[in-house]
Amino acid sequence: MRDATDQFLVGDGPALADQLAEALFVVSADVSRLRRVAVEHSPEAAEVTSIDDALSACVSLARRLSIATRSHSDPDGYTDAARIARDLGRHLAPSMPEGATLSIVCPPTPVLARMPSSELRRTLAILVRRLVVGLLASSGELVLEVVEERPRAARHPTVKVLVGHRGLGHAQAASAADAVRSDVNARGGSVEPRPRAGGGTAVVVSLPSAY
Image 1 (cartoon, rainbow, N blue to C red):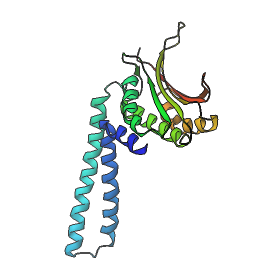
Image 2 (spheres, rainbow, N blue to C red):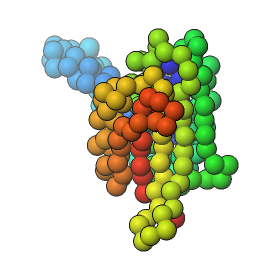
Image 3 (tube, helix red, strand yellow):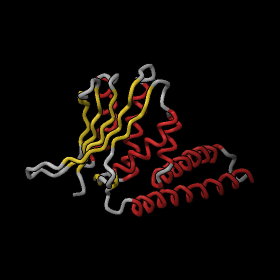
C-alpha cells in the first residue's frame, strides 16, 4: 500500500521536485557536518568544501525547480479532483488487501477544486495510508468518491472527496482527518468523519469549487 501511494505521489511533478530538494538537503547537511570535522588546510578538507558548495547550489536549484514546476502545473491553484481520484485508484487497486476491493465514483467531467494538484495528491495519500492500515483484517469495499455540490442558495459550490469503508470506525476516521486538517483548512476547506449510509464511516474532504 505504501509503495502504491509513493508511486501515486511520484507521478506528480511538484511532488517529485519536492522529494528531490529534500533528498539533496539531507545529503548537504551530512556533508556540512563532515566539513566541520575535517582537518583544516588538508587536501581532503578542500575536496569536502567543494562538494559542500556544489550541493548547496543543487539544493537551491531544486527548490527553484519545485516552485517553477508547481507554478506551471497549477497556475490558478485549482485541480481536477476527479482525475486525481482516478489516478489514485489506478495505483491502489493492485495493492488492496486480500478480500478488499476498491470502488472509484467520479463524474466523467472535470471537477475543479481549489487546491493544487500536489497538495491534493498528498492529502489523499495520507488519508488512504492511515485508513487502510486499520482495515487490513476487514474485507469489503473501500470507496473513493468525488462529488460537486451546487446549493440553490447563495452559498458557494463545494467539491467533496469521500474515502469510506463499512469497517471504518469513527475514532480511526477522526485521526486520519486530523492528519490532513491543517493543509485542507489552509485552502479554505474542511475535513470531518461522517457516518456512511451503508454502515461504517467516511472521511469527507470539502474544498471550494472553481465554479
